[in-house]
Length: 503
Image (cartoon, rainbow, N blue to C red; front, side):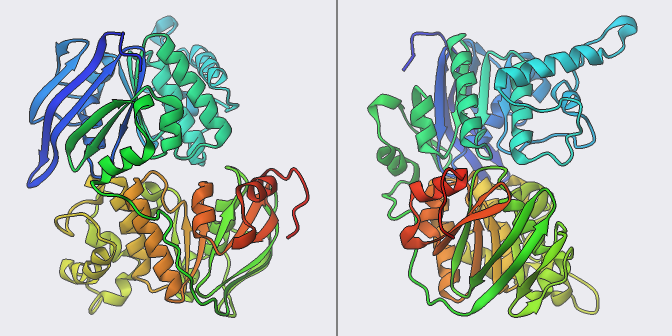
């Protein structure tokens, strides 16, 4: 632990409530210049609230907030940025109709002659930032349509361009490949070596132990502990996070495998994926594995009708599903939990009840009218089953933790009673305790006869939960592995296509 540098950021016994909901009871964090400090805890532990107080999104109700030894309170995010704090949030927040460069320099564009925006200077600086990050991204292209990974890279470039003395990264690697993570870590270490203070929030303990000097644990809005990373273990951290010993993270139970529910035949999309053929049977969990950009999510989106395809067929329970029509997919019995839950899975400014009932409104409306009461009656059992931690179903989804937001999206699709559930990155950006809950639910659904198609970038999740693993490399399925044959070596060999793996 590098504690020799001066204290850059200090919060002591910080409190924050939203009406009757207490988000922080005793939020405490001390970060030194020239160090990388991990902040961990389950979703709902108060991490994001603490970060938003530092960022000027919220103002504290009590406690102390010091920056470089001086007491501060930021009334806006602009004030926080001006003080030298940069925050990279878990979910990208880009303007889709603006270019990559314009997103990076929004509100602080360099001016040239006649006080006109110097677009050339912006472009050159953006190129320099991407070069420093080791990525090849066109600064002139629009942000619309960029992958989650590229959006995250832009957020990182934006933060670095601020030349901040305190940099807070909230799940920055959630959608990055292994190579991109290593590049980010190299940048983070160089910033630390320059004397900056970094806060790293992650649920991936391998990253915490590889990158950080110190770790602070929070639970249920309270500060629990701070330890040098070299003097603790992942099991000790987990026990502090959840207040109990976590059992099996992958509670996969045997299920009776039935007849094919989903049958995909020779699906083809020029330049995206080729000759995709497989099936998913009742009670079976099939995982699509592979590196970021391999085409896994694109295959899932085509099956559900979000994206089109050039040839091939998708059948559900023996009947062909009309392409390019999510409505037809839903009617046939499909549910789809997307990778980007905030942008594609939720109406964040709507209530939990409204979100859960969203897909089945026509079923629960009476005489064409939909009431709050009917939404609440429909959502209640599903929210209860998934143990959504919210005091009331009329709370906005935007106020919930990432893990609870994911549960709401899953509840929405389970309310349609699908025979096939497609779930893309089921535990991206959620804590270890909630991961176990989501895994348990997936296993229970399979045990009840539901067919599950799961896309995951986390190899332990793939190996722990799947009955079969389909490995995708550059739009091709390069391996079809039974659970007994799926190992880290066999999956990664097929994902990189370094040798022939029998399908």
